[in-house]
Amino acid sequence: MRRKWINLGLVCVFSINVLSGCQKKDVNYNVDGDTQRETAAEGRIGGVEQFADMPRWEEAFETVITKQGDIKTVDINAEISVPDTKKMSVAEVREAVFDEGYIEKMAKQIFGDGEIYYNDVAHLPEKELKAWYDYYVENELGDYDAHLEEKIAAYQKAVANPKDTYTPVKDFTVNEYLGKIEGVTYELTFTERDNLNDPYRPVPHRTKEISLVPKEEEEEQLCPKAFAGTKHISYMPQYPSELSYVTDNYCELTEEEAKQKAEDFIDMLGLEYPVFAYREPLAWSGEFGPDIQTLPAEYGVAVNGYVFYYDYGIDGVSVVASGEEESYVNLYVKKKDSEEIQYSMKARIRLFVTERGVIRMDAYNPIETTDMSAAVGLLPFQTIQDIMRDQLLNHIRKLRFYYYQNKKNVSFDEMALIYFRVRDKENQGTYSYVPAWRLGDRQSGSDSNMINVENPLLINALDGSWINLYEEM
Image (cartoon, rainbow, N blue to C red):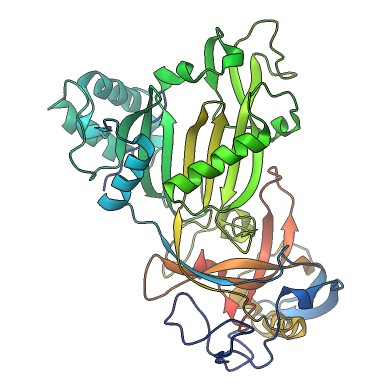
């Protein structure tokens, strides 16, 4: 049974005007604009082209890392990495707000003129209520679900006054709905949560998600034509990276045709995920006949369709690929009480596509662009190096680096120009994505589509200000 979620409820070496979120704009960031008012550090010039063919940054020096005078060697042997774009911009964004108007628009776009029903706990039919209540209580999910007690209480309240059948929507004030798409019943859910009490996801952040999934008992109706007659057919919502090598795909659509359907779906919903990230094959399990080629070492698993991932991005560059919470090893510790948890930077959508079209959607942490300053000027590389060197020599303790026992140096192997998000300290839920330089030690991980960076030093590429990782993520 699929788990049902319910909603209850460096300081710089220059004297400069720091860009720190979506502040009132008094600067035109355009390089070639006639009205540019330069308030950042003098010498900000050009765009990404000035960093072409940069040699590795190779340097070593000693620095004091504790009040007691402990010394480490800073060892920089960093490859210079810049995004594949001719220009960079500053995007001002805000979190999507799941209010009544937003939910209604999304639901009607998805279900069209068809009837829409409530699917939250208060409106579930008695039989389904009882099944979910037993699921939460009998399976003892307390160790896995930080909100278990709230869920049980909500089901107990609803069971006292159960419904006979699903209730047609009158307004869009709840977070869970049912509707039909081409004869198949789908669940549309809007979820907001944080992971403060989740021991299995220690990086603290708030998340939002819009999910569109078929009801489990109707998954067989989505069976691809090539697999007609297969018993106990179901698609696999999680995809191991080992499937990326698959070439035999029974889908009637080419990859490009399926990709176009995914992009049309995103555009239809008006969601902002413009940058293609990667794709994976869509795997199905079942009792296949001998004429269906199943995956090696995967009994009863065959491929039909595609799973596409798209990210929020700027100038064709994914901001998710630059790194999100789980990418930064240092964040696997508890934040200070003064450091608020922030909205997740993983603004990504996942779309499952077969010849039927999009059969499932998971839209993570949607954001909306409110303003854009294009082709901004960036500080020279030497200036950024001087700022970073000063930080590592004189302010390293505030960076809160992790030091391995008995290791005498702090190593950096990558210097990357990325997009990084800074928050508006006066208006919660609003942010700016700015070009930033990140010096860090890149770690290998099990997921080839996600980087891991240790001990990052982040400097705003526009004005040279230090970006505090713990305050912004």
